[in-house]
Length: 353
Image 1 (cartoon, rainbow, N blue to C red):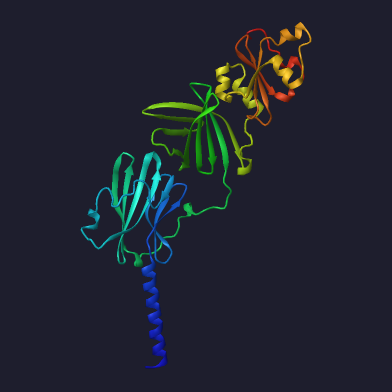
Image 2: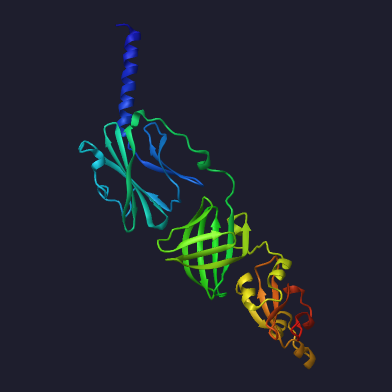
């Protein structure tokens, strides 16, 4: 036997050892590649790549190898193995989606053959089930990542939308967006009573909530259960480019926009459009607090008799005040807070015109 022949036999032996080592070290796993409109469920391959075996067309709130719903065998049984006892369970995975749903993946292996069985479970019981992959894993070709699921280098957008209830002007909802992640926070009389996490997925608001359903359409947000919805109208939106500035108050509302929304309207309309004010003062108290001014005559005091001042610090580019005429129950004027220079700026008409 020549030296070249010996070398060829040695190379083949090394190759076989490497192949067998790869086979013995391989442990199939499920990974999730999340996108804006669809989430890819992938099975890892021996060569380091992965193959799409299923698509979830709703957001994934949690995922991992085990959860409280993972059992020793699928809830629907092992009929898909066709009584072949040489298959063994080697891994599991779950993905929690909206409305209390769980996708459960069970991976069974027999030498080079893999079967992945999916069950969809509700918190109340079993949904559907199916085999999503079956074949020789070492002959399976890799799938490339879909373009819509590739990570982008563009910075995430942070914004806050504020909504006021159509039924109770003291109730409001804030939607806090961090890219596609959303936090829903409800306030009653400025006390937070509810907080739910969710995602903005495929242009829909989907929350991690088993009880309520949520709908965001244009400038209206509704949520409820059993056909009874409470609806809120958007009154402001703040957008910041970086997370460090996220809590700073910014808005796209101009003073003229706000004036147009509330002028000559009642208090209910004002609160619906602008939310609850940061402060409510009589005109005398406003001048005393912000200008250290006290009425110097009966005339000046009488001129402010029907003026009520509503202060909003964060809904415009500068703090504003809404001057309300309690005599005819209408909004009289809207102006920047620091533009007030005398008691005459706060005086309202006595009449009903």
